[in-house]
Length: 279
Image (cartoon, rainbow, N blue to C red):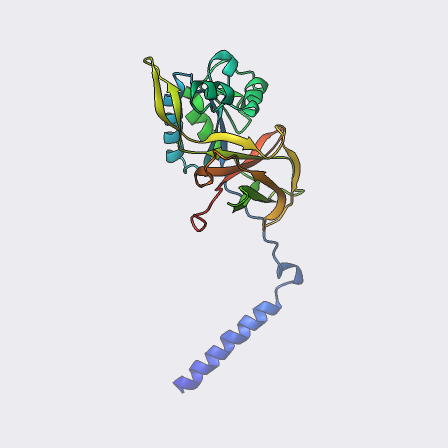
């Protein structure tokens, strides 16, 4: 009798479950899955110079801020050497005359002018902060990390060593209905560059190591128009091919891509030019 009672109860539970499914209205059976949010990363455009005696300490402090807030792929730093006319930086021609590698670029000089800079070290964070002095970098970075991100970016790279050509694909998705419209920027940076740096106490260090140094841009200074769709899966939104200069070391280089509009930087992504599998 106990066995029969058990089977009867089990049958009743199944029947009740089936009946309960039948009672769900058609409109309640299908639930829209919201587009997932993106992870927030922060872009720091640092302005520095090989003749700026206060810049090495600021760069070291910025690297500490990176380590404390998710690393170099979360707090993405691009360092522009500029201000050559103000004796803050060394450009390519002046560097060659001095027998050293000058790190200033025309692109960096244009940004330096666009931001109205007169001194260094300074930074612009997510293109929302205006020019920020070094004492305010940390609080501004942390504040930017707390903002909601509706755009997500991913990068894929392919490097041909025989031609020194790098192809970069930018993929994106938006959790904002209607998607995103703005500009995409695609930059290349290099780490572990050894060159000369003027010292605060006088003299020069000819073995100074520089990181996050801007090398070139695959997009105009104002960026290239881009739209990012409202979707859960990333879609390819931009592609570019760049030929690396002979003195650049691809194994020490990274690609930085970000999208912005009138509201500043929506998000940024960073990836190595050469992955570990390719090295």
